[in-house]
Image (tube, rainbow, N blue to C red; front, side, top):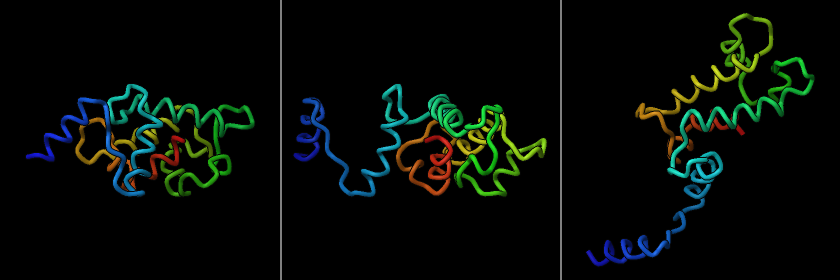
Length: 133
């Protein structure tokens, strides 16, 4: 009970505890980087903003698409092929964002439409981060 009161008083005073482990600190960093509305989670809109920025930086040859080489190992050949419905060997921005959306849903096991640090630290969350940052 005393601990709860102390932590409650610290929270009211604006003092927040640092993550207890390096792994937890590493897991919270992506949320902090992507969470533009400061709600402690990342939603699809925030992910898409970051993914759009990444797409623009990867798309070096000004053809409006990225190919597997431009993706620089961010996805497997199989995942890339799945995301390329017209089988032209490239992903348009829309195809890229569709892939990101599917990956977001895969990383959201509780289907609440947001990802927290634990979800982003999962295997599927890490895969999503590779195509958004």
